[in-house]
Length: 293
Image (cartoon, rainbow, N blue to C red; front, top):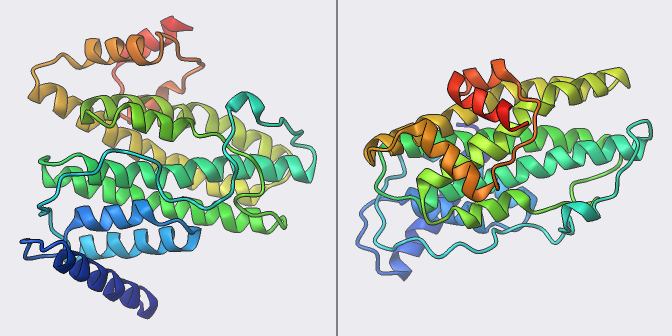
């Protein structure tokens, strides 16, 4: 491990050790759930990214375990900076991509999605207990990759003399997290396979627009994100199917029922069929989605 990351890991170990003493925990190792809670609660951008990277490193090295004697707290708002101001989607200002401000606003919007995705991944780790170790391994990996995506986008945004928080944003991703906090099956169905999967549909078109205005750096970042997000949605698909199997539910009909209940039976296309197939969607599911349009 690099020197700075090693120091961060030591700080997290100390934090977890002190938390365990304070709570009179009987756990004999550092808890991944407490690390996830710390990442969720971090308010500053730098702290959330650093804690995420260090926690993921500790997990990879086997220094965090799945023990915790306290159940997860009810879901609230995650830690986040004072800006961006969160508004309803209809109140977001549309800007032309031909202007520098419009270009920065687009990068900011994607940056905001990635920041939310860090919290979504850690909430899946923190909230849903008694699942196979591979579930936690997958979502720690997702959190780490989302932090990397956010960092790439933020650095590019700052090259325009803007920063994360300079534009308003909406809270739709986290609102869905709150609606699905009671059940990992519903979370897997609706956050990775609906909201995040939408990114698979629209990212190629966004890349084409950015390529058209000469922002090849943004295109290269989105290529990384698009590749990784196929994997993230596939993780959601895989655990959705696992949870359906555990409950003796048929996945395709269950997914359709959840779309009808939570999304009012309406999802907008067009859908990126090749990417969604790689991400674990079945031909039958895609036919259903395309039929909704």
